[in-house]
Length: 235
Length: 275
Image 1 (cartoon, each protein chain N blue to C red):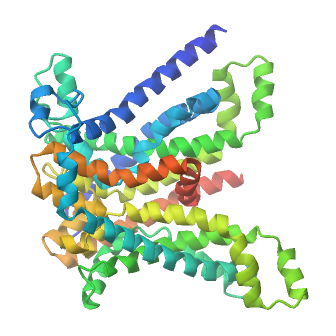
Image 2 (cartoon, rainbow over the protein chains, first blue to last red):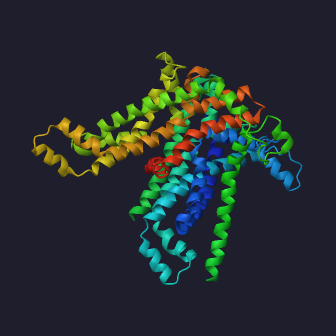
Image 3 (cartoon, one colour):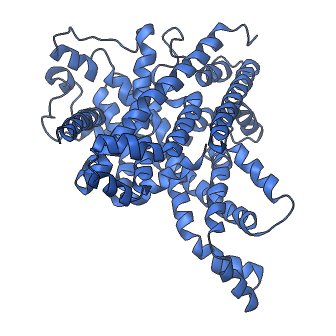
């Protein structure tokens, strides 16, 4: 049943899409902001506070907030589009080909602060002497970042990638609140599909099958990644 | 020198863009919460509210808001006490005693951290129904305690392992029993670790959604995150009202953040040892 279920495959690929885009969007932006905050010193503390705000809200609140931000009639996006001469009424979440990207944007918005703080901690654990030494030797900030800081933060980047990967495979709250997997299962994830089958159409048996499939997929992918990462470290 | 300037300009621009992106939805939320229902249509979303219009807040608070707030506080408090006590008792032997099953048992606990909670929703739901706890606040305490326990044991064990062994040895020589050593030496010294865990777990449980959605149904037993759901059904087209609800729900966390910024950040990152 499960192997022939197209919706399950669709949701699996959506999960993979989220994994890929999450890692490739969240980590670089978080890294750049963390680098700025690290080199900027104390005067940027108020920026840090505002940047951190999204992490304080629950996924449900963020989901609702963005549902209305994306709202075609009253939302922020439509308002911005009229400023640039559009007609307004941009229905992003209702459009099957854009909805998933709109949702991923919100996921990035929610999680970038987390990785920002994570990288910030990694930056501040680097010894200040290497920073001073490279600046005295005439390195620019860019050279310091690419040649000195980044290579010594490999471990932090790897664990951030793993955290993002495993988190992305389990997303549920936000998507359930914003789109419930629609329109036409364009944003369906494994977890939302499982929830809908088990608790909305009350097919507990099939819901459990999807849950098992999900468990299997997540376990295999996590073990595989951990193996690759740990294997490389020992060499 | 030129290179520094260019790099700085790019990165500062990025920071400013991100400031707008992170701040705009918050502005939208708070500003809208102070608007009348149709003000948002006539003046546009960016406009500053005409005046301090508090009717949205008073109406939300008048309708059951305290019940949700009480439920959230009750569930988080009870689960937190259970988690911390159990984690203390579990972490001590794992960090100090050498017995045959120490490593395998600890490995098992760490392995359970990797289980995605959504996979367990169906069995937990059926168990709750069998126990006649479905749709009560007590239904949430079990899963919340169980699913936050592994990470708590893990963090606390590594914390306790750093407490110098000599302290315990000298206590033992002075004739202090195992229990007294535990309560008079280990527990007080673990306080910073417990504080971190308390913050981490409270934030997690305060914002938890999946179990609350599945295990409760009626407004009398729902927690704060689910209250947004209830209000949405009630005020679907009244955006300022929904935004008032969202603002009120975010308020406790933002208050906590402004009071203990660094502690809160450190506590929230405790989960990052995963992976």
